[in-house]
Image (cartoon, rainbow, N blue to C red):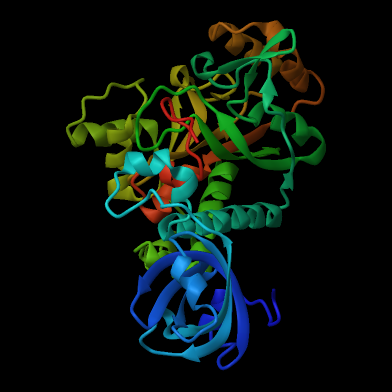
Length: 429
């Protein structure tokens, strides 16, 4: 059909095709009809443009048939018009209906639950489109930062034979004649790769059988994880604050249009810069007691405690946690055997954004920790091997992409930060 150049809507709105005859492809975002003119708002991945079809146009009959969300190919002359959305419109002389849509089920003022039930259609909304574009920039800038720090991207397995985190959150499955699980974290396998590549990272799905019904929990989420040989807990804190700051700065600079549409203050992202505040678990407990919290030493923080800490300090690292509330692979503090060299990055409104720290690098300590957690040594023989053959001090961290995005964009829930959210009750579509 195309006898004229195919262009993107964004190119037209930027003034590159004024007065020219062009073709656009997209979907009907809005339609308004009068006796003499049909006004069609057409969206593609880059923007929305008004296309007018007059009664004397060869496209008039087809324009009358068009419905919301029908896919179209239109040709016409680009004209500047201050009254049109974006300041430009397409005077249409040719229109082909590619896919005529049935009555679209999404109308104004639908509930959030309904919109999640029809997520496959709600992804077409301008809001979700903007969020997904920012998500893409977050992923791009994460790769950019870690590679600049000479981290090598690797590909860990999704099927695992033993737990990385607590066994209560494992998703079990039948793997031929064996019982396996979906990975909770790539950490253990990343540790194997530092013995050759030294600094490695991945961005991959992780699965947690979380029964939590909160704004920050998903059963399937995208996990940025990094591990480094000869690294310390301080190295990880510097890496994490550098990464988070870099991502915020990049999004602020490259997603201005999306941020404006989502009503996010660009300056709030530009203000995220290292160094972040740092406090020990002990000091955090004292501070919470002063605020009236009843939490006891040795208990993990909940959402309310994390929110209180970050409300005052902004992004804050809390480190030196009690050993009993951290995973078996966390290294014991050399000066206090009750503490683990573990650190969480806590941010406003979301709470825990990252968890990381130094890993156990001594074979005997690792075996002892496995026993303390009631884990079978034989299930972790390969992991113990890493301590048998050239063990090295090392550290790493994990960051949830959806939590990062929800925090940056002030979203109501992490469910809005991923195309198809999975929770304890939601696994469709």
